[in-house]
Image (cartoon, rainbow, N blue to C red; front, side):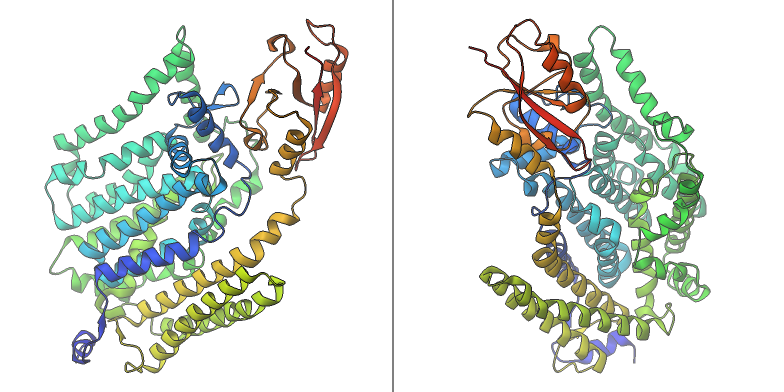
Length: 570
């Protein structure tokens, strides 16, 4: 009797449907990506993404993104627009509002994997496994919780790939095949430029070659799709270049071209490092951990044999699997070999191994996977759950009387108990205790791994994140607060715009920027400058004879000192 027949023989079992798979994915996403999302201050490049959004809200200029007063043209503005809308929706800027668009983009791709790939190609179990692998690899856990471009970039490229692969596998008409992914590819152009097309075509071209369907590339729908994708970029780029420099907009386009070409030619500002270049390959594999360890399954003969048996009814299945597999590898190698390549350039391909593993591990109830995998995976899950449970029991100890931590501990403990019940019942096959039936035993192990990850993130957000944030000295918020406390209420602060600083975000609002002493208006009473320039301002007060005096200084996280200078403007 097959596993599916056995499953139906159980009275009233809980069958995994697409809706239930999507519901589980949403709950998993909430457990991993929402806890502590707004706890840590903005860091690294995050303020650079948020500052243009604050400028858009304050000035009403949504066309030209700016950091300080200067146009910031290294990246298109889609993420800035979304951050601005999020801040407006929540009523004020906050770390939560700034990072929420990235988290929601991650959720959107996870749902697309389950709803589209799971419903039309992978099946409910395969889609669920693929969605779990996507949400729980270290690259997405890190970047999906940051106000950075990567999560949005990965999501838009990934949704386009899922749409195209599903449409091609079903043999839909060329108009649907090429036009369904267009909105997401167009938005991808407004996120990070046209580089996402490298990954898009890097995957679909081998599929078309192996599927003997390259003629579809010459269909008018494909040409129209490219025109729409390029047109979306031009609709913003042309008026933006005119607004930045109406006398010589070509100069703006030259800058954009340099930004694209420098990555491939090694002419960027980054110095070439042989050691860093040699490590690109291993670091690329690290980005998909812990599921990197399962990638060899995609090349097992038994897996391909099982897929070939299933593909007898649908010949495109095997071509899709093989083409996406080789396209993923070839594109990764090309990007890694770039002189100034980086493992983060490969992020848009993360969705591909998730889909392929979801298919390989669940085809015919998981019969194409190695026999030893369920046993090892089960033991690993038990170790993970034991570690997480220990962390849960330690939460009241570190809470120090915090009743909210205690309440959260109770909730997380209940969830952990449910996971333990599911895991042990699945191992013992006691269906009377938990009536969850899946054709592939690996699906149950993937669910357990996902639940353990969510529990670990909850413990991390409640216990570890607050201590990480408080342990960092001279953080951007504290640096900005030190200067704000030294200023009179409502005072206008002028900041020397020599180089971007993360604490600028926490100085907003009521901040103006200048480049030279001559740019300051006569009534400017307070300026913030690096220490290396403050001596010049102290010696030369400018058009006014009233000298500047040092009011306050602070040192940022990069050990750079900044001086707040003031003078009487009355």
